[in-house]
Picture 1 (cartoon, rainbow, N blue to C red):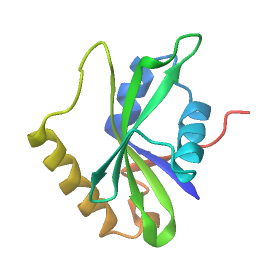
Picture 2: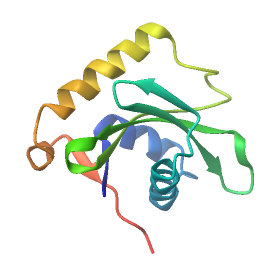
Picture 3: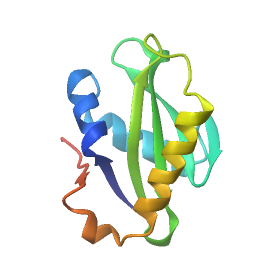
Length: 121
């Protein structure tokens, strides 16, 4: 399993200083066990990620693409529950197109676009 994030997601994550890379890895481990909020189709998943000391209920929502061919996970979008209750259909379609484009390119050739997520421990 390899975990990546887009530059766009990374910029958002940096603003949300409480969201660690370890939390992102944990979320993928949960996803692989079938623990997620929604399968959005097109190998996209919606997952809740907890804020430290606050739990998952009002915390972050992330959209993750799964490239099954090489078992890579790509964080493509994130938002806090307080800033957005859910993503709209138009945005979802755009995210599906982005995921499809990312899936069409070998993961190693996406080094300029994606950042590999590593455990911070």
